[in-house]
Length: 134
Image 1 (tube, rainbow, N blue to C red):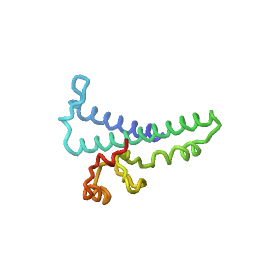
Image 2 (cartoon, helix red, strand yellow):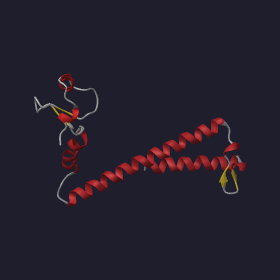
Image 3 (cartoon, rainbow, N blue to C red):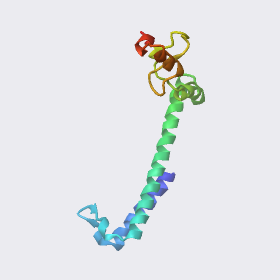
Image 4 (cartoon, rainbow, N blue to C red):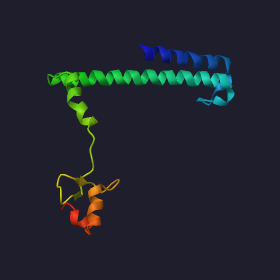
């Protein structure tokens, strides 16, 4: 309904331009150069409103389609969102490449600042290759 209203308003505006500015349409195309700044701003605002209305209508249609698809499997959309939500929010860390030989619970991906135990290895004369996870 809202989309229909915006499109009607937009078409009315274009119709007004056609009636009062016969040069606005040249060869079947809009000639925006004949419009002044105020008219262009108004047209831009009307187009933005129409696009927002279309986006909202598309979101509502997608939500209805998702609800219909979920209900075919006997589920509600809320149940699916609860199941999917945490997966999207999980932070995936880098894969550890090095392990502290003195304390195997301490690992390092090789990115960022070197942990203190890596500095301790180097001070003891060992290299990172000695701590590499194979």
